[in-house]
Image 1 (cartoon, helix red, strand yellow):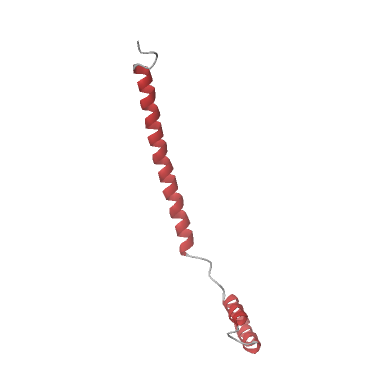
Image 2 (cartoon, rainbow, N blue to C red; image 1 turned 120 degrees about the vertical axis):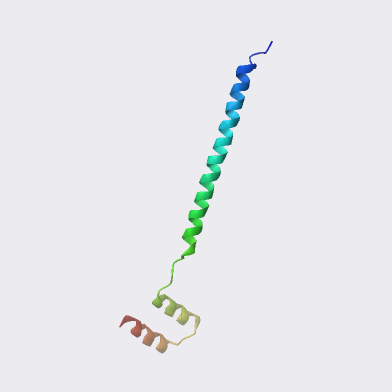
Length: 77
């Protein structure tokens, strides 16, 4: 006696295994595509504008207030 697991049960088991394999392949492809999209977004990070760079230099003490104001006027003209 086969207790209901005979040929029909083996067929279902094989089908389940193939579905798991196909699902794993689909998951891997989606993961790879998502990772590539994230990497491409980081290739061109936000670039600072000239005024932002000038403010940072002033904040770090590389230039004094007079130099900052002069350079700021130069940028705005």
